[in-house]
Image 1 (cartoon, rainbow, N blue to C red):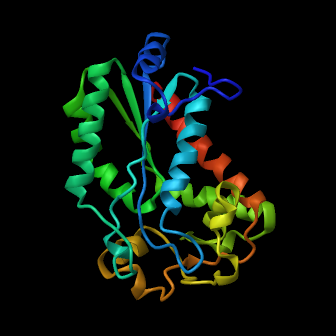
Image 2: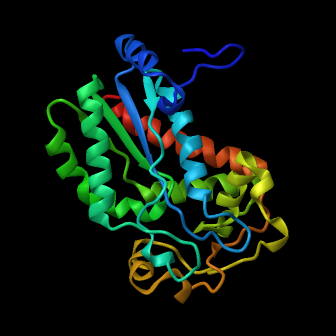
Image 3: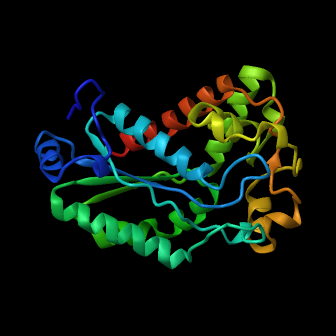
Length: 258
């Protein structure tokens, strides 16, 4: 499906129903379902950060897989640990699971045979890992469910990207840090308030920390809502981070049949 003068369109929201049917008949049996969040990202990034990130990753993943279409990003996710900051929205785990089940049930009825889920928001990953077996069981055998759930690998990829480009791996904390801010510099540079960027929590961010943050709230550890340090942000780091995470999801999805 090519628009005049433009690349092949993979987002179902920008296609007609007939075009989607043609794509499925031609072999596009994989759907990409990006999850995200609408939450604070420090004083220098908009609440859309995770959704913008997920939008971009989904298109990259679909292009790489070659026979996939992209569903609209689920823009509000599980973010109770950010609710101390104005504007943040959050849904319950059961709500997020129900949204994914309803979306995927529609897909199976239209001829898709598999769906790949990933998240542009780290906080969704524990929820996704929990509901994955229930989602897979509910949709089998009509639809294969592939959930990329390794948020630790994403943080490692960000650290490696920042380190290899600028020696700034230590600035990656996973939220509004040098990697995430650099991604936004690539996607929407006009949305980065660079003059307001400042370091936040600079301690270790691991699964133990994340469990505490989910209970106590990000504000307990970082007054400005940042985990890491955005200092040194650059488009070069952003491109490297986008490529690295795309590789992770594509390799996982390919290994599991997508």
